[in-house]
Structures are given as structure tokens and as C-alpha cells.
Image 1: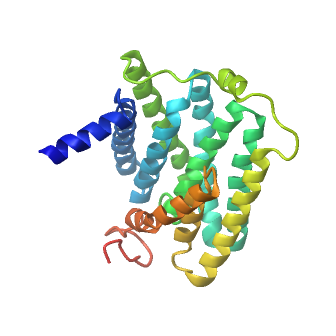
Image 2: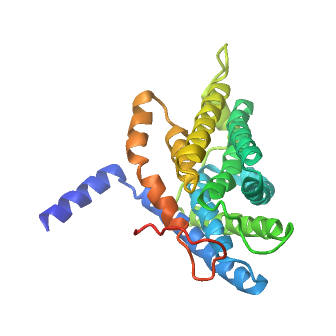
Length: 283
């Protein structure tokens, strides 16, 4: 009992007004709502279970991003995220059929999403939305469904739009109920950042660093672990994204050892999955 009380006091000290807990609850509600709609769409349209998993990946990632989105950002997300999800589905197919070209396009897309930060807070949020389907490509390199041609691309966009709608509705309701605070507008965030310094912009350096890290991860993964290359690339992304110092990179690198296990969980074979079965995470 004393141990539980001590842990509760530490939790209250970390999150005194339960803001993080409330935001996490909204995120989980977004994930569950997206998951339910994705199941209905999957059964009605005859899609593969991977389409549901991709929708959940996008919804869970969007849950953290939507905390800083204002009304204009949400309108932008309704256009940007479905298009990015459609592009991610096409990119997954390209990586399967032409690995070298697909790897290069992935690196350029990820670096370009980071490079957009130099154009202000609104562009930074748009770049963050572009990254979400790219992460889903790493989690599910096999694509989003068994439909031929470009049909699965359209369904990927629809499921991404479902995630955006659920996130917007639940976040709006939580803010109306004053469960979570309203974020500052993009103009206010840009004004608080202050004037830019001379030299190479930080966004350009970060984009170059991410491109180099992902290129190296693709090369090492393809040569050393050809069946599990996505684990290496996903780990490189998680370690390199948002790291503020060398020490932060080291901490993320040590903690990033769980990324391959997470990827194996997401990619565990289903009974009706076509193609060779992959080793589940518990083996």
C-alpha cells in the first residue's frame, strides 16, 4: 500500500493536473474509434487485416500530434493526411517491387517532411502529418490490402480521413469540456520562436542528418538483415527524430531496442495472410 501511495505521489508530481492523462485518454479514444470504423470498412470492402493495423498506427501517431493542432491545422490535416496515406500505400508497393528506388524515395520523403520546418509553424505541422504514413510503411511494408491496382491506395486515404475525423471530433469535445487546453495558434508559436539566425537553418541540418541515418539504415538492413530491414530503419528513425543532443540520441538508442520488438508485434502473421509467414514477436 505504501509503495502504491509513493508511486501515486510521483505521478501527481509529474502530471499535477492530469493533463497528460487526459490527453492520453483522448488519444486512446481516437484509436478505438478508428479501429472500430476500420473493422467495418475492412469487412464491407473485403480488405486485408493490414488495412486495420495501418489505420490504428496512423491514429495512435495522430493522437500525439493533434494536441498542438488548431482549427486551421485540422482543416489542413483533412487534406494532407489522406494524400500522404495514399502516397504511403504507393510507396509500400514501390519498395516491394523496386527496393532500391523505393528506399531512395522513402529517404527523400522523410527528409523533405523535416525540411519543411524552415517555412514556419504551419509547415512544421504539415510535415509532421506527412511523416505519419511513412512510419506506417515501416510497420507494414506489405501494403494495406489484397486489392489489385490502385484500389488499396484509395482505401488507405479513406481510413486516414477516418482517423482525422475521429481525432478532430474527440479533441473538440474534450476542449469544450475543458479536459485539455487549447493549443496556441501557429502564428503565436512562430512569433515566440523569435527571428532566425544566420547560416544553415536547423531544419536543413536535421533533414540532412535524418537522410544520412536512414540511408545508412537501409544499406545495413538490406545487407545484414534482408528479411527484417524495416526494424533497422524504424529504429534509426525513432532514435534520430526529435533528438536534442548527443546524450538524447544515446538515451533513445538504448531505449530504441524495443522498436524491433514492437515492429514484430505489429507484423505478426494472421491466419489469412498471403505470402510467407513471418516470425511472431513471442518467438
